[in-house]
Image (cartoon, rainbow, N blue to C red; front, top):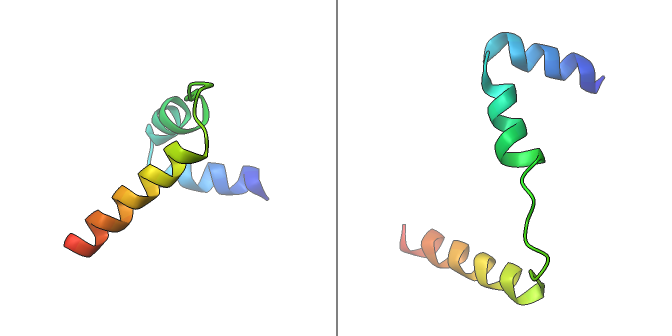
Length: 52
C-alpha cells in the first residue's frame, strides 16, 4: 500500500522524493533537544498563527 502511494506521488511530482528524503526522513536532530525545544517551537507556531 505504501509503495503504491510512493509510486503515485513520484509520477505526479518527479524529483520530490530525493528532496523529501534529504529534508524530512534523513535529517538528524541534535541530541540535546528536549521537551522545552518542542514547546518553544509550538509556541512560536501558535503565535505566528494568531498574528496571521
